[in-house]
Image (cartoon, rainbow, N blue to C red; front, side, top):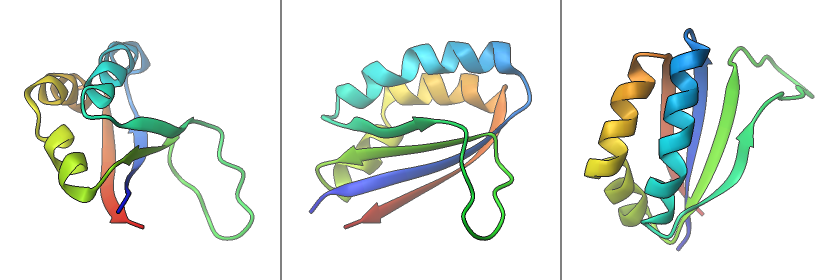
Length: 94
């Protein structure tokens, strides 16, 4: 069953965040994942959007998504992201 990682990001250091963006795609591909949505802007039809970026990733299942998130390669990228932004990560099975 496919699983999606949903990410809301608020960036406080765009320069460092660019480094993170360069590292992340390869880590996702290593786990057979792909970007479904990557970026901004978000056009709000109802409610409120208060974040800088929205990202949606697709993996073959929840376990693979979790393995990617905790992988050594993504952990290195995540450490860079933590210095540049604040984010919320969610995994949802479809």
